[in-house]
Image 1 (cartoon, rainbow, N blue to C red):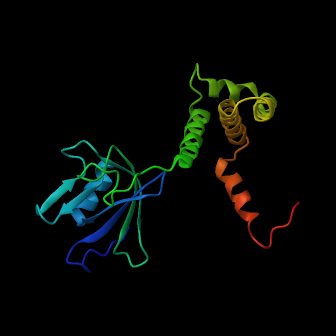
Image 2 (image 1 turned 45 degrees about the vertical axis):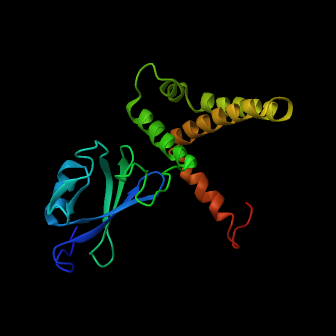
Image 3 (image 1 turned 180 degrees about the vertical axis):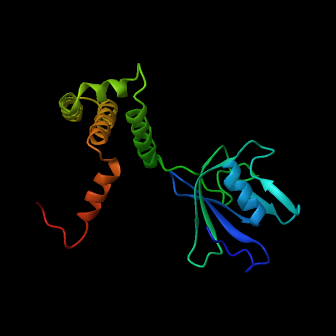
Length: 203
């Protein structure tokens, strides 16, 4: 990246965002050395204006910000850093520096998708997910059907608790099937999103 550190006397704002939840966690400043150390270590390092030195977030608390990606903005004078945070981000003990909870439960589905992708690549022994992939697409599709039927049964004649349980099984097995076919759960999200446009027509 070609970052313009000269515009603000050697510093650029660095916006830190949770990779999964998309919550903005904090804002800090980086000079060139802080940026280079962040790239080298994979942990977000800022330039502390009060301490007048480099400061790696979590160096005292252990609440590091592990870098997933870094992007510069269109003017090349601001960074967006997506991270996996370890523990609370704010020194006050809150999840973000705005006192917000860093919770978006639905985003766990993306994390689950990434986990299943990794299983598909590594195929570790004694893993249930691995056994599904090894069973072939017909068996995986059959499992989706079985879990769908069990979800319907619980919805019509069972309990809400069991319906949620079986629905979770259904979603998990559907993600496995999608992964085996080269797709991700986000492909379904895009399809659903397209249906909310005026130009969408049913196939």
